[in-house]
Amino acid sequence: MQAWLIDKLGSITNLHLGEIPEPAPGPHEVVLRMIYAALNPADRYLAEGQYPARPQFPHVLGRDGVGRVMAVGAAVTRWRIGDTAVILRGPVGVTAPGTFSRLTAVSADSLTDVPPGWSLEQAAGAALTYMTAWQSLTQWGGLHIPQDPLFAADAAATPEESAKRPAVVLVTGASGGVGVAAVQLASAMEYTVAAFSRSPEKRRALLDLGAAVVLDPADSQWRKVLLQKLDGRRVDLVVDNIGGPQFTELLDVMAAWGKISVVGRLAGPVPNLNTASLFFRRLRIGGVAVGDYSRPQAAAVWQNALALLAKTGQRPQIDRIFEFSELPAAFDRLAAGPLGKVLLRVGA
Ligand SMILES: NC(=O)c1ccc[n+]([C@@H]2O[C@H](COP(=O)([O-])OP(=O)(O)OC[C@H]3O[C@@H](n4cnc5c(N)ncnc54)[C@H](OP(=O)(O)O)[C@@H]3O)[C@@H](O)[C@H]2O)c1
Image (tube, rainbow, N blue to C red; front, side, top):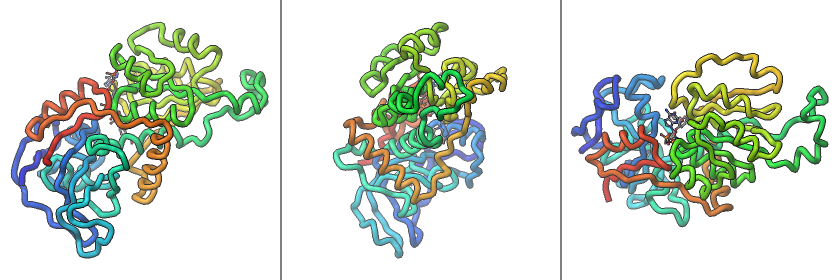
């Protein structure tokens, strides 16, 4: 069968279309005939050897997707041939062959149904990004400032006033897969959402997706603009997809006890981080790792994310769908900065 292969680590440009044997399902697996696969920056990182996983070669990338069940293992009772299934998470595309392939074997407990009312396209690329966004928004518990008597800024608010104030969430790289998911989920959680995008067009779209304030990271005055728009409030949580030089600027707009969920580093390492900038407002920085979710946890988190999206009626955003033969162009599109997810049409 046809699959996009990498033969060694090095570069995403090593991808080539080749033939590999069709997978047979293990006892607890099903084989999906892929309909859509979704791209993630982690595919490129893995191809470049920047990711801890060391798969067998040739390897097939692609972690997300939707497909039709065409074979089931002997111990599988939940899925039948002909069912349509979405991949939630697991080793697919990491240490096991992924979804940029006509057929993919997946553990049956890593699969879920297409959410009611969603298109196959919407379902194909949502799992990794919405679970990541969920973790980045919830890993700290509540976002409100604890009533610490040492803290002058906090002493101004009574506990009741503090609890009523909607927390402010700032999302960097907000137009990407994780960013859109974080904007939608945070606004469904009734936080005030501020969102960064380099593109005026995408900034406008982010307002429709739930952002209350949109910002251009290239504007040297962005901190002033944000604080004016927040009318005395500051940022309680940053969901940072970008890293790079702007990371240290984010610290300037944080509220007391503010948190930063570090999701990605698309703009590279953070230069000149002075840890003293964390002292006085008692800021916290913490990594996000969606791969840490066990399969049952992933299933529960997915349901939580779906319930929030149902509350606001928001759906995953599709940037563009490429044909199976166009995977390299699809990766170029991802690198250029999409609005939502970039998909690959694998089959019917
Ligand atoms: N920790 C985890 O568990 C986890 C899970 C999933 C993803 N991630 C990581 O999170 C990051 C975001 O993933 P994603 O799927 O949302 O990526 P994506 O779909 O490629 O979107 C990222 C967005 O960031 C902006 N951007 C891209 N490069 C940039 C740069 N050099 N400087 C400033 N902005 C830039 C672009 O928005 P504009 O063009 O609109 O500015 C782009 O749309 C990636 O690094 C990914 O590897 C981590």
